[in-house]
Image 1: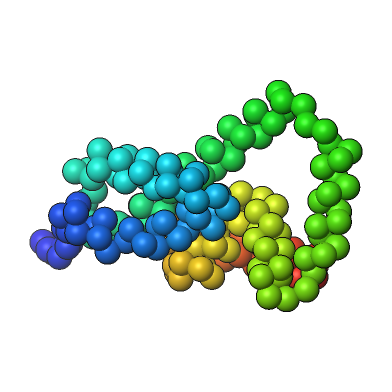
Image 2: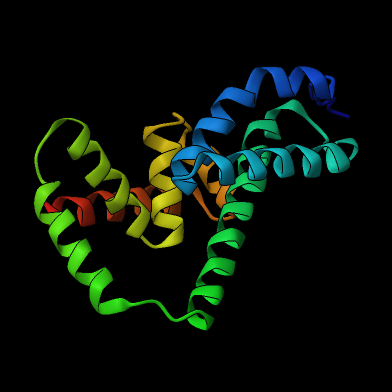
Length: 170
């Protein structure tokens, strides 16, 4: 009978120490708001702590934590969209301001970075998250697939589609 050499996950505190910075960076980039990111950061680790005893091996730890974080980001965005439908905004003024801002942000430097951040935020959920996990967090496609609950090929396609849409905006 073959024996499998599964490495057990490290103690929870060690997992937090090794991954907290990259999870926080991912959340800040995903939400675009440091306060939201802090809330989601705490919620990510709270949920991970509660479910940690069920984790079977160290191999799935990183994608598992990213899945928790990305699900929380998706839920937060969905909640905000629901609230935005209920609250009426002054859309005409808002659209005019957005158009002027877009016109001024096509340059390089901090303005270009701000434009990129806004462009990524407009991407559909999985595409934006897959792009950030790949380009900013350095995850492999298999890890992204696990985190987003899809195949590695689907993760690769999401990154490709996101990059394609960003290029079309240029």
